[in-house]
Image (cartoon, rainbow, N blue to C red; front, side, top):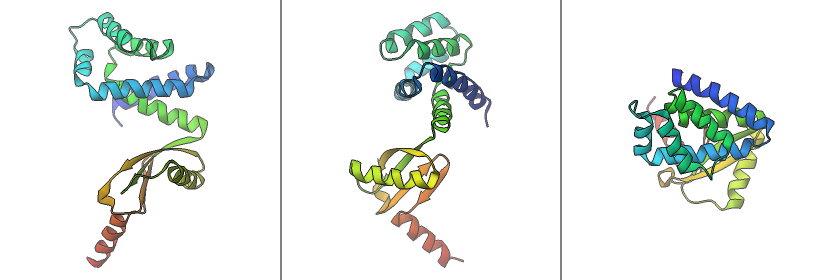
Amino acid sequence: MSRDTLVAKRYAKALFELADKESVVSDVEAQLKLISEVLGQNADIGKFLSLPSVAPEQKTSLLKSAFGDRVSALVLNMLTLLITRRRQGVITELYEAYTKIAGEALGQAHATVYTAQKLSEQELAEVAATFGQLAGKTILAEQVVDPSLLGGVQVRIGDRLYDGSLSGKLERLQKSFKI
């Protein structure tokens, strides 16, 4: 585990505790997701934030103008703290760590459901319910269409992959013949 991951976990835990006290855990998670997505889509912002020649005040001013009306004061304060302490490189990892901490505390888990064709909302909810019983948690499912699966479903919950896809079965069958 990298040092940045450990640092992100510490900040995420502190942020979760504050969000839990204010009963805004889900809101903070959504706001962190927004910030993480924007930083992932726009490499220039990440480069700007990592420049040591730019004063932390300028960096926080940019973030406040970019996200000011879409994120809470709690999240803006966390971003300001990270930038002031020159930890802006852990913002994306902060989101991932916060999601895990919040999920564990609330009995939730995020799952990515890979299918060859798009599922209806009802079908996705059924997959989430089935794997929720298996994991003993409430599953928040997100779907990714991957035509290479040919058919069936792959579900990733955390670091576990449940492979019920046709391509996965064919691959396992092929490996069994090579023995």
